[in-house]
Length: 394
Image (cartoon, rainbow, N blue to C red; front, top):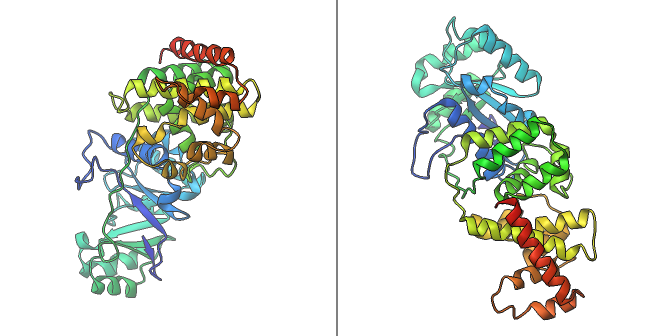
């Protein structure tokens, strides 16, 4: 989406099942909408995608009526109401409510009619498909729209001549192949287990203690990764470092966490794409690193050690470099140093845990001695970590 100076002001986000798909194929508008939200918030991150620009997201009736939209950062998102949505009194009230929260409201493929006209009182943007209505009718449509305080968007602009015509008519924004073709962005997804999501939803419904919720998150690498990705995304608008899952839950709050988990439940695949053995190794490693550190560190540092251990296998799970993964997570420098270089305060603990996974255990003794961990301490911690993971049922 460009302004009259041809500067980018935003991007329209559309979901596609794979890189070859040209249209969204879903059983419902809600499914399409929720998949866009999950990919934007959890799987791909948004900071690198939209920067400080606006994100235009298509919404139909079911998505407008849902609570999922409250997961987004309103000042960064424009909700694009698709042409199939009718301007009922209930929908108009909901649109006013969302605009009051700070969301922008756009009308997609708009055609002036008595049925659609009420939407103009709550919209910020009106998009006119110039290929659909024809250039000959665009001038009158633009003139009619000037009676309302809306930004006029010419979409499907495919030639220089079409751009000049719409520019001369006074359109405010432009979108189409003349400027850029859509780009398909992909990301490998690790899906949380259904049972873990349902368990957390039940815990939240029963107002469980934060400590218990934190332990449930520690059980599922995918859930904990997605939670930190979401809470550190541009859409959430957070600027401080998240030091632990307890910190994340406290900042997010039970209500938003419940909505976020519900969204994951709607879109999660039935099969987890990450091998169960790899997930178990990650959780075990997290607990072992945490236990190694308990002899010397406490509080926040122990929380960080668990994150270091669990996230140390994300590059394998997501099949992408750790550097790229960390671009989308706001983690303390000491955690990033450990994950990238096995250095800093936490790096040696992670190295020792990794050495314990080697059948030959060739490097265990020198690494343990470096940390002043005796063989008895190491064996006790290792057995304790394995037992803890078994109790979790991972």
